[in-house]
Length: 197
Ligand SMILES: Cc1cc2nc3c(=O)[nH]c(=O)nc-3n(C[C@H](O)[C@H](O)[C@H](O)COP(=O)(O)O)c2cc1C
Image 1 (cartoon, rainbow, N blue to C red):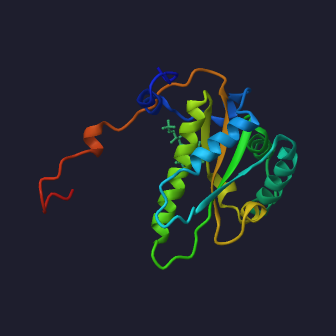
Image 2 (image 1 turned 90 degrees about the horizontal axis):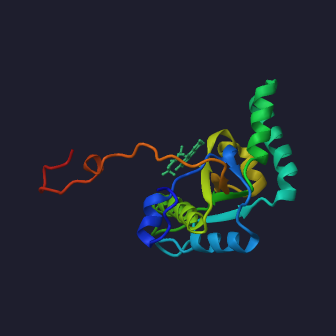
Image 3 (image 1 turned 30 degrees about the horizontal axis):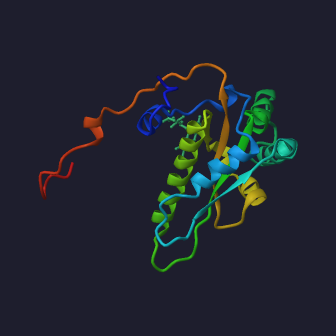
């Protein structure tokens, strides 16, 4: 069911995140990745500010990325356990492809920061749908690395923020659907003023 990409709507109905640690080859080719990122850049964006950008970490840069993550982790914990070190390595090397999504707010009198944040999330969602359309899965991770100033400074500069580490690949095992809110929990018809819940 989660593989049904036969119609535009079934594509949207079946996208699911994959676990980056369970992603295997193939990942998107260079051309496919450019296409995925071009779709991400076709995102509603009040004021045409494109308050987001994407940095691909090529495979041959993964060791440098690992070194960066280890340095950043040690800044938080000077005595990491073996398990911590393995987790840092996994973060650096897992999944065939990795894109760092940056929130890149632009100064504006007109467009509040909140709207720029909304656009950034939407751009990443577009990226995930494009990856699914091409037969891959994406996994959006934040966690400590996304909030580390050391990691941020290696990819961008203030006031930019890492919005996510976006891993791309093929799921090693079939993805299972997760619990979704029942539409009645999140959708209603407004009865008029005083109907706020
Ligand atoms: C902003 C944001 C941050 C996330 N950070 C993490 C994370 O750090 N670790 C993780 O396992 N999943 C993370 N996720 C993914 C979610 O936990 C979950 O896998 C995803 O929402 C599954 O939804 P889907 O099945 O609709 O793809 C994040 C998702 C979002 C939107």
